[in-house]
Image (tube, rainbow, N blue to C red; front, side):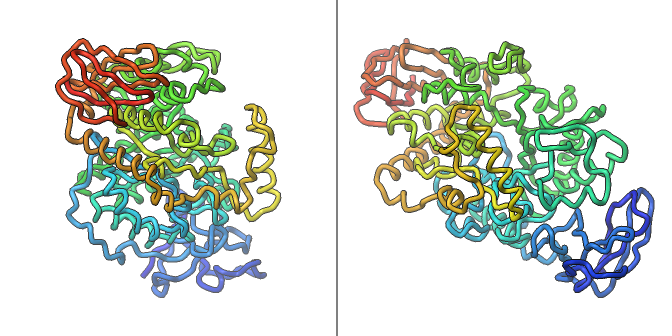
Length: 587
């Protein structure tokens, strides 16, 4: 017996279509299907004995004969426009029973895109590379969005089926095999979840009910979080989030662009989510966590609910990225202009944010809110040198390895992996991958594809890039250029950088002061082309200049724990560093 249910509050009739009826394209005449029963709250239900797992199904509303996929479908094997298929979560043979899970504090994250992490671009192919990540020493694999979108290739942020893993990646069983394999390697899995908008093609939920509100978002009409009938819309999101954590054994979610939520209710959706996830963690018997992406610089996101916050576990920290990026590359265009300040890194490393109710010239207004460092620790901020946005939203998708010298690339790794934050690497960063990661799509609709490509060119032209240098996201070559080239690891220079990352992660784990999240305990001293960062009994010393430098430490150096190159010399109360070199020493 399979129970079908769908929320369609404004429909007069809802019919359930099975197998051939659900697959009819275009829909035939008449009104086939089985009439469903209306129940309280706008829900329609029907139980069918013969609808076993693997049965195709769809819904038809009122007099419309078009089969519509289930908004809560777990399986879309024919794509987002095709019928849904009955899926039984209980049939998967999990091997991770009894796993204790992993808490987010103290972890190192690794962000990857399933479609470009391997040449095959599938969950199973990515799982075959998990041994590399375990040997690297990272703790959490963060997947870019994997819920179903139209087409084959996409970053994932055009998803329209918020319960169904993308079929070309391997569908629901493929995602479960990946998570199960990650857990066998001792790795947690964080899934990027997009609840601020539907993609531009294949978004059928708004046909069933008021999933969209009147407010606008950067991607069109915003999700209805606070208007009439928004209770069920919020339930749709919360149930999706809990489903990834419960049914797929995922350990955490990264919530995309929460600043784009249009939510005026006294209990915001984010608080509702954090409460629901905390309630699930007990029965699950393992830590579950939520990470927000937000450009508001508002620490209330990660402040405990009992102290008036929203109770999320962490948030991405673009200020940390911008401070590092401007320091290392010298770029000052766009939002980097605000960080043309020698105190930027010190302010972020000791205060969490650079913009904390302070003037932002880029925004031409004050921005952010101060962090109470007695209440909020640094591990609640995810810091990075690169991620999908900061690489992919450059016109050419160029990585730091193509912008920095080998010496500065090593210095950058030291600064990130000795920070008081939760560090995150972007796939390939650990070996200095030089393959670009560009914006790519595969919209089957020619008009939509052309509009996306034109919009991308206009956006980058405003930022000074010639239109001819902006890759066409619809071209398959743009996607293939963005795939990691694992053969780079055959080259000694890439192997050396990989080994440095392994050593840094191991050092961070063996020296607790290098992972100490207490921002008040950090001290940053800027010199002429060099930095000294106090981390308990350790000093992180970085020479950013193209000349040797003697860096005074005002303390006796006891040992050099790590250096990024030969020639580091210890003197009484000082360290002599070759050009573009960093070292971690004890005092």
